Length: 212
Image (cartoon, rainbow, N blue to C red; front, side, top):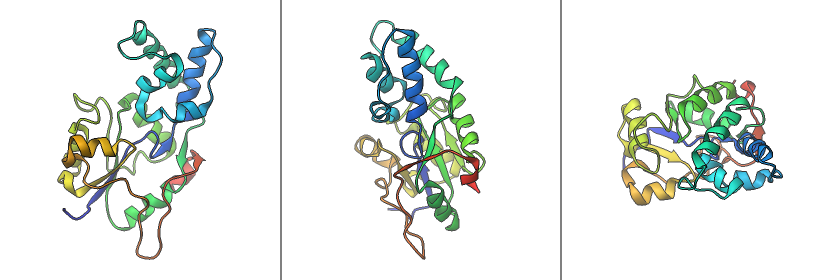
């Protein structure tokens, strides 16, 4: 295996806890249909699956269901209106990035989230300019778990995929389908030369101050 030369993160559920704002959009959509709100915990379990998973949780629909596209489009409109109100960085992410950067390693984001959400969200979190690459769900013709997004990220970094560590809840699936696209399993933490850095855990309210 090649020496680790870059670290890539999924966005929803790994880098940031976006469930409160995603779940809020689902609940506003439910309210429009006369339905009671769901607990955010239910949404958090589906956040990394995007609109598909969230609409399944909120309405029991799949992409093949009648009316799915209309609800999806309305859900995305509602989400865009309140993109980063309650979104939080996972605890330990700023310290983890500091340790990565201290080793002179680039890091980036590879997500299935569309570019129109990914880039403004990262800016509001205060990390847009620090990421060496950002690959969104519409950056390639395919979304994860297809290897194309991770291969694009590696290409943008001018590195082989085997030199990039990808941290995401979907990483096990990626390793099974395309081992080249996920060189290492999700880390429990990154250890610096002086001390271990804690793994992401408890959510933290998003703030540009965390990027300083």
